[in-house]
Length: 302
Image 1 (cartoon, helix red, strand yellow):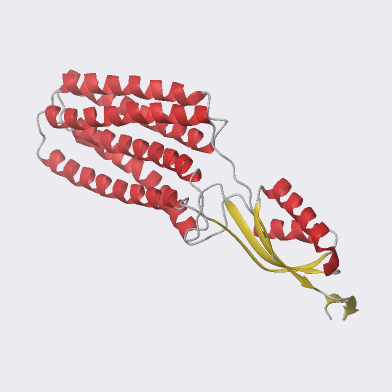
Image 2 (cartoon, rainbow, N blue to C red):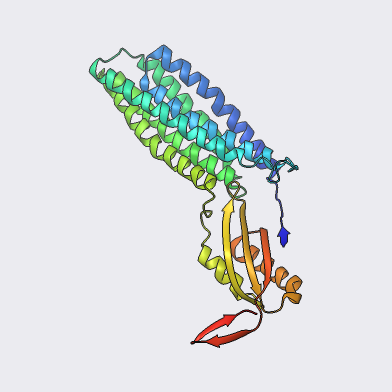
C-alpha cells in the first residue's frame, strides 16, 4: 500500500492581516453590544449578532492556520485540523440561537415599541461602517493569496451592508420618530443571517460526514486514474476531507503488471495533483492479471 502526503502553510502576511481584522471587529463587537443596551436599539443588537459571525469566521480562519502548523502524533495522525470544522458547526449553531432571540424580541417590540436613542444608534452605526471599511482594506490585498482571507473579506462586505442598514434605520427614526423601524430592520438582518448560518452548518456537516469535497467530481477522478497507463480498473474509491481545502483519497488500483507499480504510482500522483489538486493519496495495488474479451466486454483477472 502506498501513502503520500504534502503540507502547505499560510503566508505570514495573510495571518497578520487576519489578526488585525479580528482585533478590530472583536473590539467593535463589544462596543456594539454595549451600545445596543444603552440606546435600546434592537437593530444594533441584531447587527452585533451578525458581526459576531464575522469575528467567529476570522477566528476559525486563524484557528485553521495555527492548527495547520501543529504536527500530527501517534494518537492524532491527521493532527488537529478537524477542530476548524467543529468550530464552524458551533458558530452556526450559536448564530441560529441569536437569530431566534432577535426575531422573538422584534415581535415583542413591534407590539410594544420601546424608546430608542437614535443619535447614539447613528453614531455607533457610522463607527461600524468605518471599522468594516478598515477591515476590508486590510484583507483586500490578501484575498487572492488565501481562501481563508477571501472568505473573511466577503464576511466584512456582508457586515458593511448590515451596518449601512442600521445607519439608514437610525436616520429614519431620527427624522420620523417611527420606533417600529428599529425592530423591523432587526428582523431583516436576522433573516439575512440565517441562510449564511445554514450554509456554514451544512458545509461543516458535509465534512464531518466525510462527503466528497466541494469542487471534486468522483467520476472525473476515476477517469483520471483510469487514464494512467498500466491501470486496468479502479474500485473502492473514497474521497473525503479532514477540513476545508485538504482533500484525501483512497482506492484499490488493479494493474496489468504489478512489478511496474512504482512507475504507475508516480504517474497517478502527478495526475491527481495536476487535475484535481489532491496530494494526500492512499492506494492499494492489485494484480489484475491478463485481460481478455468476454461477451463484448473487457475482463481482467487471473
